[in-house]
Image (cartoon, rainbow, N blue to C red; front, side, top):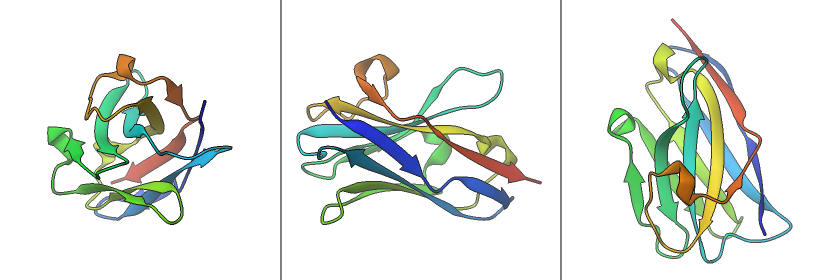
Length: 124
């Protein structure tokens, strides 16, 4: 079982950037696929991006393509989400999630482990 710890959230103005980080507490990400999801107030949680730890293969939601980049720091054992050109609509609680295997899945139900979330607020 892997425990996930997110960090890096905060408040920025529109057009700004943030970098989120997800670390495995008490374990490693070897053998897992990892994802970022987000939930805005009054809305359902939605898929943002996914990366397979073993080979780095990625998948993105259409609304973040060319603005967000998901990556992994193998030596540090952390997953990153670089968010550029942020918009007020990106305001949400961002969650890190993990599922065993190599699926580039955008389906929330595929993921077995979740972090507590880190808040991102973008002001206009």
